Amino acid sequence: MYDVVVMAGGGKPEPLTVAEGVHNKAFIKINGKPLLAYILDALVEASSIANIVVAGPAEELNALITEGYKIKVAKEGDSMLENLAEGFKLVDPERLCLVATGDIPLVKADSIEDFIQSCAPFDADFYYPLLSSETCQQHYPETKRTYVQLKEGLITGGNIGFIRPRWFLKNRERLALFISYRKKPLKLLRILPLSLIVKYPFKQLAVSDLETYISRLLNFKARAVFCSCPEIGLDVDKTSDLEQVKRIMAREEDRMI
Image 1 (cartoon, one colour):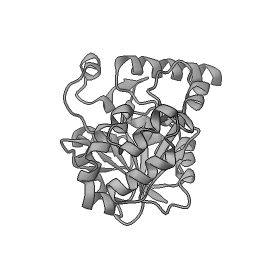
Image 2 (image 1 turned 120 degrees about the horizontal axis):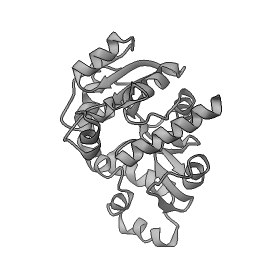
Image 3 (image 1 turned 90 degrees about the horizontal axis):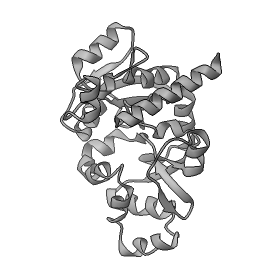
Image 4 (image 1 turned 90 degrees about the vertical axis):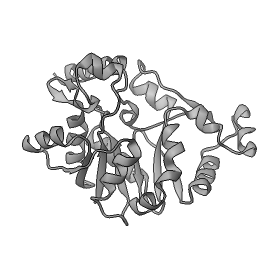
């Protein structure tokens, strides 16, 4: 079983939080339930998950503990990297640890299990999920995603990952650029060497090329894994994202009736 660190830190006010009257989007209510609670419920149900650590505002997280959530609270930092570092202090540094953002409310336990099993045989230091446009459009045709054309097709990323805390705690600054560009894939491509950049216009830049380069750049073994659960890519950043998630939830609830 694996531990997980959920990043639920706040930050500067943004249009979504202002519109919803909260300081932290993780506590926006959907059907009377905080956004963060949806991913926590999925993690609790996932058979591969042991301890759940959440990095975020102590007062709000302690309230969730009072409501019955068995989580460990990590100190909230000033950035995503600081939140991750604080969370990793509460887990086994030698074992791979799942990382998830607190704003992916459509994720279910089977989505998490699917990603974890896709990482076998668990011999790398960092795993990142990839989603094809076909997978995303098949399940949620109304969603708009930013894709990159690789040799394997149109690809986007997810909002969970697997990382070895020991490596991160020693080398976290190496990840700063990757983290800052995680939702700007075209900018991420610009840091590639010319030998790889010239492949991109001809649709010859492969996932294996990126794995090799990022592993060398960050001095660890990185692996990308294709996933069949687009829910891990549907985060809530804007009001339009929130309304879309509400519509999807309502539609799924109607199907169950």
